[in-house]
Length: 125
Image 1 (cartoon, rainbow, N blue to C red):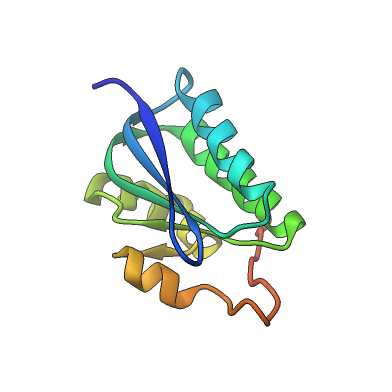
Image 2 (tube, rainbow, N blue to C red):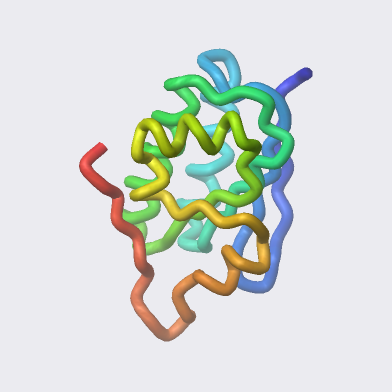
């Protein structure tokens, strides 16, 4: 399956839909797409439902995006992780620093209000 990303704008965030394998080959495109959104200061929700594989370079891209979001005063959240991808996030502990939600509605509901400060713990990574 080829790697692809698509952006959709929601009322309170930008949704990045990811499809395919996140690995050393796709990381630059994946990371650039996340950074472009984060640099606008808009919360980013990454829809992972069509991700078939995520290796350590993909995990590192998400950690880097989370760190950058914290520096920019915004947040990143992930939704709809397939079980084998979710397992990697649990084993590495990344799910303790990057919010993971089942649905877009859940992720949007957890976003900080426009009047309040952004909540993002970039973690020790």
